[in-house]
Image (cartoon, rainbow, N blue to C red):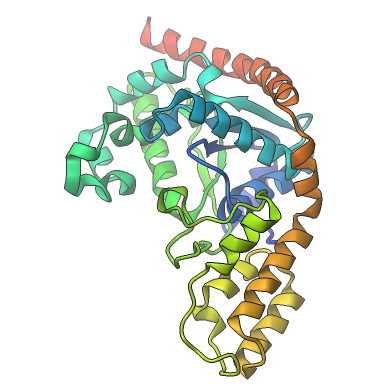
Length: 336
């Protein structure tokens, strides 16, 4: 598995004393990309008792796309079960639902009043869909400010994100600085934690793996469904015994995200020598997923909703105390 690396010398020196915060959207089933880029690195960081870890289920963010309440509820339980099956220890990580936290939406409004329109208009998520504004809701446009409130209300200092989310952390820093300069220095300026070793995991069609593209691989799916999904990965037309370029193959890129260095080098050699065909490579990927995540798959099946509710409720009690302390300072600074 990949290791979290911090490029800044200053961060290397002080990050273990920081509050580390990250969230997971509830827009669909989590996939390998979510697991290797966010869940496993966060769980790894939590093993150091000096780290103060906060993880939340971003169900308010999910309202930009999910309009069915029952679907959102099921997605929320599924995401929570994934985190717990993959090693989240509620004794070490404060785990909570975004929607249960008092102050997030109110802080979003306060921060909206300090956020310049061009800053949000230039956000990647909005710009990518701005050609058809009739399909864009205000929630999507304001997404970065809600994310800013998520971070600042809990005084998050180190934010594990993928490269595509770096801009949102930069926006958070700018808004926090604007508030501090305008009213009172309350917020710490968060830093993005990006593991440079982790590459974006492609979906079965070669695009970035994303729930919105319906090209994901769910490691917790039933074996036959998982196998069928993997066998549908797109490949080129090279013959079985023809040498292949591993760096251009979707199968290899996904395999590379979960396999050991020795296993990766072995498969790369077979690709270059032409001693493996794509069907066999897909079977290898399938077997590797089952092997790497065998314990997680077993635990996932054992987790029930009652256990999840109990864990989240306890986490929310702890998280709310932090949020209330921050919000008291905010209201005092604004004289409201």
